[in-house]
Length: 221
Ligand code: AMP
Image (spheres, helix red, strand yellow):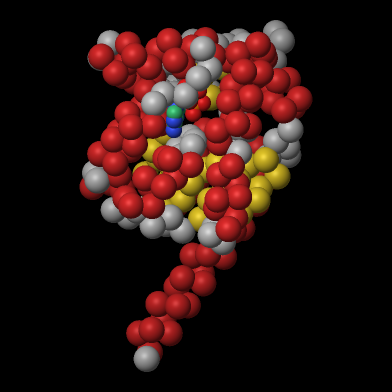
């Protein structure tokens, strides 16, 4: 399946993407992770992206579109992929239409106030990219690889407020865009992680079963 995970920053897209890729074996394409890898490697793109990301703004469409186009052409995407953090603008969505036919857009909806609360406890592992929440008194170590967790520079409450404004202005129009194309699947992201993934798995298992029935019918005909 070719899927998009849509939703505001800190809606839990990265966490759900990990669970989806574990269960369905599709390639995980996170444009945020790809840009952070460029920053860590000190490339020209990384240097350009760093200040944009730290300020909570969007990297120019042409750069992101070229990066995604190249990634989707790789072998591991042939069996399906999950786009996490892309598209973020109508121009990116239009460019994507020319690259691949998307099956569904999972829209994880969470209220802004809950996001601002969540971000204070959100930490990321610089070694493996895993994201998790930490609570007072807890050791800030990655649950996956044991490395020391850090807070992303763009995860302070002030920067998150700005990122949410950018989301409302630039990314929210995608909800109508995909709804008009009959691709939007609303997911309630305010619930616990396992309850959010249960909604996603229900949808995906249903979609996979109905695709299998269609295949069976066309083999019969
Ligand atoms: P994320 O990890 O998805 O929250 O992305 C972190 C930051 O990377 C965003 O706030 C943007 O600055 C940049 N970024 C990631 N994906 C995109 C995209 N599709 N278009 C533009 N900028 C992006």
